[in-house]
Amino acid sequence: MTDTQHRSAPAATISSTGADALGVITGLQTRAITAPLVRPWGHDVTELHLVEVTVSTSSGITGRGFSWTPTIGATAVEALLTADIAAFVVGAPADPAALWPRLWAHLHEAGSGGITTIAMAGVDLALWDALGVAADSSITELLGSRRDTVEVYGSGVNRHYPIDDLIAQAQRWADTGYRMVKIKVGLPDLAEDVDRVAAVRDTIGPDVALAIDANQLWDLPTARRAIAALAPFDLRWIEEPLRADDLAGHRALRDSIDVPIALGENLHTIYRFREAIDGGACDIVQPNVIRVGGITPFLQIAELADTHDTPVFPHLLPELSGQLALSLARSTMVEDVEDAGMDRLGILAGPPPISVEGRLLVSRGLPGLGLTFTASPKGSNE
Ligand code: MG
Image 1: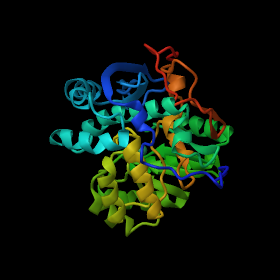
Image 2: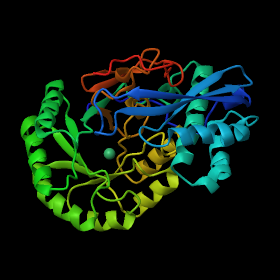
Image 3: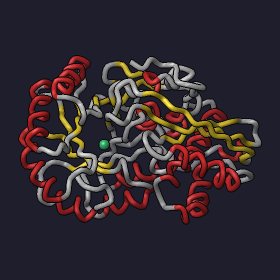
């Protein structure tokens, strides 16, 4: 890692210091946003969705967060926010860490994770944003900045790419100078996966780390067979080889392979991560800050992982994950899916709070989360 460490930085904290100044929540509004993808994530995935959540407080400060629902659930998430969550949170203290367990208990009948936690993330992010605005601090500064930069790795949602397009993408990553890249595997024919991984390894050379992502497509025997065939290409990790909540299966697989297992983009809340880590199901955790329920549980998960010496590689959303990564105790890398950044999709009204320069994200120190969305996508859809 090439991160620049701040030796005397304060530790990141999950206590939302300064929340008293915000008073109580006085209102919650939502707005659905759709962004056409520059590079479709599949033949049937041509656009992404998110729900902007705006929370007003008795202090007069407004916070803005979002629930990220790329392909599934935007309508349900917005309905949960407007029909159930708004009535519960209005009048409550505008303190994200204090509100989170109360709101989760209130919603638990609807499910302990998934739509529930994705909707909760919108509120949690809005409150952390308001805290940052009140303190005139970026979320990184609010949590305690530990480094100035964090490395980015190139990631492709490319299982549907013809092999020539996959090789061209790998070449773009190599030209950019990424020190790690990740591609999809899990095609019906294992020989095709082998050909594609071999071609990418050949393109990026031996010195660039290569991870693969099966997106839960294998069962245990298939995963063992596939990883035996793919491991010779020097893999940094295998991501979601099995159904994400099959912890026993992941533990059994982990006992029989040498490639590290990465898991977490489809786990929700600190409780599921504790089971995965304590249960020996994975070597690396990848919390998605939205799916876990927001910044409050994300910080708890990062802290838990750190106490177990388990690396944390945040899932997607580099505009937010990058800011959080700057405050994490352990250096990490942030995932940048080619041409899928919020700026590239044209959904940011202002400048992104981070800049992607080669392989680095650099904090610009905007107050709060620094994310302001447009009324409609303004980017081109090539
Ligand atoms: Mg993945």
